[in-house]
Length: 200
Image (cartoon, rainbow, N blue to C red; front, side):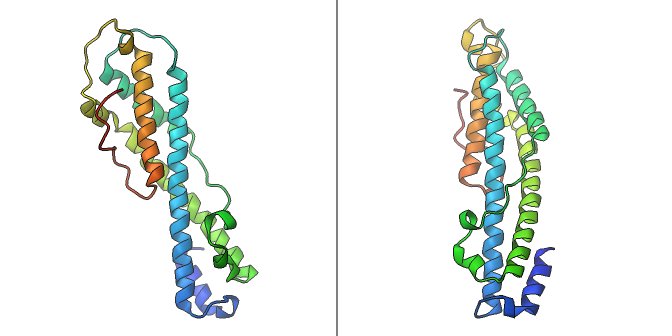
């Protein structure tokens, strides 16, 4: 069932809605749809952040040979993107009490309430899948932006801070900050943060 079908059903069965007008049912659907989309966006970015945190944990405290910062950055972005492709999340069951004002569902009889929950669950699944594809593409193509903004160098030195593992850890932290920014503004488009200017 899609949004148009649900709108038509509500219009044809006003007796199941404890509302004063059809405009109120439209407002109910609009609010529910907006909230589910926002939750799906936020959940996707939170899951992406967790994948980046796992990458960070793998490299923290480890040792490695000197490596070019741009090279490591490209590898880590591609690696995290591959992990994201393999671990696409699925939204949780719609939680009436946590996601919506109680009055929204109290205004519905049991039958339309069940129909609404089914539609919202399907919407959340589709929305999170679409957002996840955007996140994977965003991550896979983020290296160039990070390299430019952090003024990374191709030079190789025996400085421990320029070892593969240390650079990889810093890049993973940068990805975590990127993903974290989108959990705070879940409906915003996936664009790099403007204030990422250093690799550390």
